[in-house]
Image 1 (cartoon, one colour):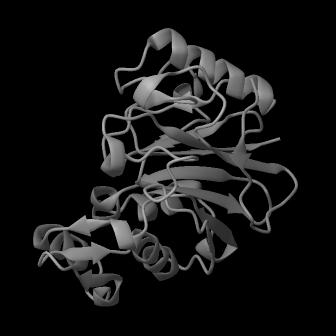
Image 2: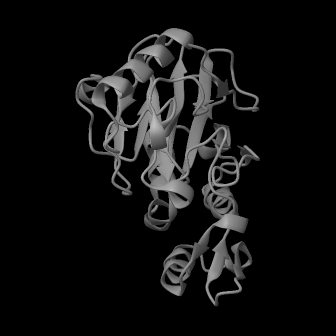
Length: 248
């Protein structure tokens, strides 16, 4: 099978490797067609295992990614310790490593995958940032866990749902504004009386507030592009794409 993915467009050392998958090229069927990499969405376990195996082979990964049990929280798994065992599946919404060959992995289907790399190539990380994670501070927790001055970090915001398709209620807007009171411009009133929320803009603000000045972003919208991405808002239940980063 032929697999396809995006390579982040960001200036990082050659030792940093990263990709974000498309849904094209796997063996899952129906709602999960075709490269579903999530094992928690009621897809056939054998199909998910085959998809993960195909990704590892096609991308020539140095090891099986550490697939997290994501819960929209702020816990960061340190893959340099026991949590680096790919058989563990730690409960966390971010991961960091300083060791070559440890693969950080984030699963998404509208939430933002955010990848991090130190400018010296000594550390990388990945975070799962939906509105709950952004409000709770998952990006800030990941920056702290990397142990690198924020000014030496680059961040890449991967494919997620765009503001045009992400309608939220007043309670979500209020939760996000409590964390960042000056972010009103990231919300636009919708025709239904709710709000269109710009998750990438909110993430960028949070990163820049931490001192991460080099922030890059994919222009892709998971909701709008059904050919390449799963979208929970568009077609739940659905599969998950993955964003990976590792040191080689």
